[in-house]
Length: 371
Image 1 (cartoon, rainbow, N blue to C red):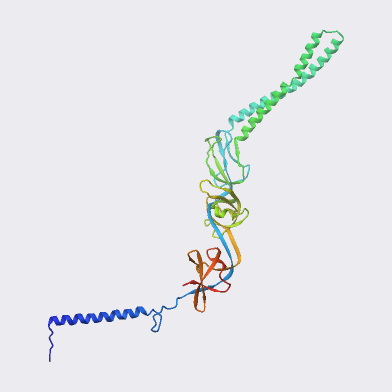
Image 2 (cartoon, rainbow, N blue to C red; image 1 turned 90 degrees about the vertical axis):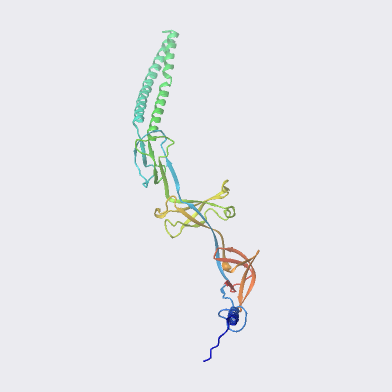
């Protein structure tokens, strides 16, 4: 058996040469694979056809909505307090209770006003008796004056005597008792009014939202004791910009979403639009009113309101993904015969799903939306 021994230096040179040849073969294979895209056969070096999704140009209705949010409030909210100062005697309602207009909410202690009323009524009775007595005195004074008139004409009494009875008649005819009676009647009316003010009643029909008063507490006309809200109908205050305010009209219907109440939308209506912008926010106030079936809507819940600001019907439309921007131009790619042609278009209203095409396309043409 023959054994071949190589010198170390010669062996290292042959090993380096062999590694270099292997590297060249490896990179040549990679370059060949990169030049041939996956899925493409043949020896050509062109790129494979792109995968394109197309949809037809079709007529549709496009509705543009403005979304705005606000907190629900009752159509009427009233904070009730007494008209006079005093100590609370009794509270007749509690939070969450429904009340009718005129129902008693709470009462103040009436001890002092009751005493004053009794005193005023006693003074009224005295004044009434004085009027009756004055009527009797007037009648007697008149009789006496007429009697002495005849005696004076018959020269049976002097002129001075006759004049004394004339003066008594004039004094009796004075209406002082009637004035005192009117004064007493007014005093009674004042005390009765004070008595009524010690009973605080609901000014509206609604629900008790807050009770900030307790028996024994001293309150005044400035006290905010009970808050009532009318939730039979509710409203949502919004703020919109100057670009949208002229596209919103009183009486316009809208969708109202209140996720805390239910998933289905409520139907609201624009009840007011401010003609002046807020000095601080520069926005315009808009008020939405809606019914509250079953009382599901509570004051303070957050509501999302969708107002239609533009609507176009029976117009040519394409998906919004089909429209591309080329600077100031809008273009789409029309696909026909396996090829895509870039075409400039004039767009109109868009709802975020479909876009109106005013010029550049015809119904039925296929436009690229993907690829």
